[in-house]
Length: 225
Image: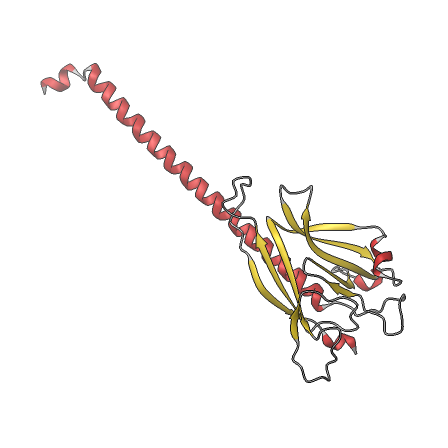
C-alpha cells in the first residue's frame, strides 16, 4: 500500500483543499448571480418594449378613430374637437372597449406629467365624457387617467397641414406646425417624438427604454365628410 494513502492527508493539505473548494463555490455563485441579473435585465427590457409597443398602438388607434365633432359654442364654422400643441394633444373618440358606441364619445388628452403610480414622469392619457358645448366645459367634468409609458422626459407633437390663415386652394404645400388650434379640419397627419429618461441618470433604476422619434400617424380625412 502506498505510504501516503496509509497515513492520510495532513491538516495543511485538508485546509488547502477546503480553501480551493470555497473559491470555486464563490466563483460559481458569482456566475449564477450575474446570469440571473442579466436574465432579469433582459426580461425587464423585453416587457418594457412590449408595453411601449402596446402604448403606441393605442395612440395610433385613437388618432385614426378621432371624431371631428363641432363645439356648440363659437361662431358658425366653429372649431372641431381636435386641438393640439407641442406638449399636449386633445381629440374626441369612443372609448376603446366593446360596446363603445353605447357609452358615447370622450375627449382624450395625451401629455407628459408626474404620476403617483411611477417614480418619474410618464406619458399619460386623460379622458372626460364629451360635453358638446366646449373643450373648457368638457375638461371641467369628471376626469380619469391611465399611464401609457413610464420613464418619459418629454413628448413632442407636430401637425402636418395648412396654417390657419391659408386655405388648401392656395398654391402652397402643407407644412409641419407646432400647434393645431381652432381648426375646422383635421391635420393630414401627426408626428410624434417621445424622449426617455437619460440612462445615465442615477436617480432612476430603470430598464433600457427606447425613444420614439418622428412617428407619423395619418388621420382619417374621410371622417370629415
